[in-house]
Length: 151
Image (cartoon, rainbow, N blue to C red; front, side):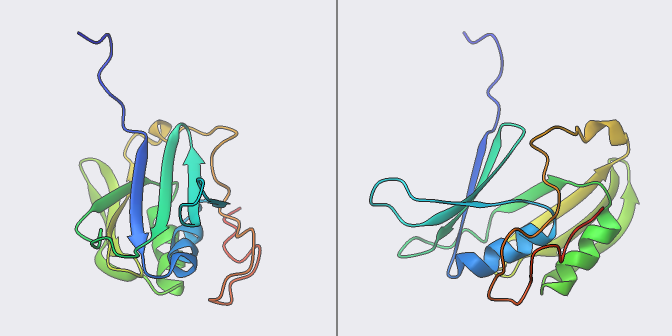
């Protein structure tokens, strides 16, 4: 018997274009570093508060687009605008719900992404690991450092 229930700590999605995929998630505030484990593929990793989100090249693997991904964000409405600006698709506009303000989008590869600003905003915990929303390098989309600064 375990003392504590398991805690989720990793989500991996696959994309035919990891640079383009990273641009979408950077627009909502995630910061990525490039990684390669041994002879494995180059991929992007974002770690916030003990949770790791990775974008791997699709390669010969099946698509991961049936996965629904959820993120708590500071301001759903402004994040939706930033994601639309980089090519995201709005499925469900920002609406107040019993959980807080919520919207649902598709990323550039077709993954469903749920965004939530919790009704109890104290649930979004700030830390030194929390992303700033600043693009840290220029991407092929033409986005430059600072384009998505949410300060």
